Image (cartoon, rainbow, N blue to C red; front, side, top):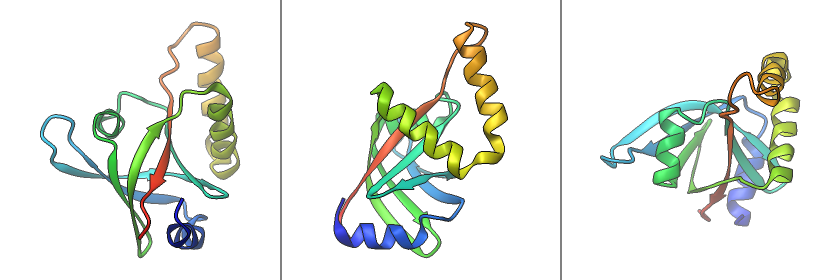
Length: 131
């Protein structure tokens, strides 16, 4: 990550939500959504318990995004996290920052491990452009 972006990101890393601007996978039209995020050292992560959400499907098709956290705006691209160890790391970040939803998330993981429901969670790393 570029040093200017990293410095700005660290100033806002403890906020609860950010505004994600993503682009329609068919139309290219911009959309905004408020979502949770995690910052770990020099990395920024996004995650969703539901990979069928429109923003998730859009960023998978068109990875260029813009993020607004407080007064800071960041541009970059997302990368789907497929490595199981990296996914566990992101899950741990979610658990630490958003501890209040952990009973629900753990129940979902348990039900998925039992084959009762399908695990549809997904995580992304955001590769920020220097600005």
